[in-house]
Image (cartoon, rainbow, N blue to C red):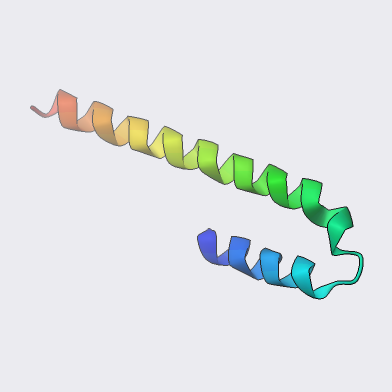
Length: 51
């Protein structure tokens, strides 16, 4: 997913109206952070359950 984030960042940076897309990028960034945190939490749960 991070590679799509880089792609989007490059696309936004290359546009003259790129600042209009900042809220979209922030939303995607936030969603990716939440998804990663959820994945990390599940990994911790699995490790504890298998200990």
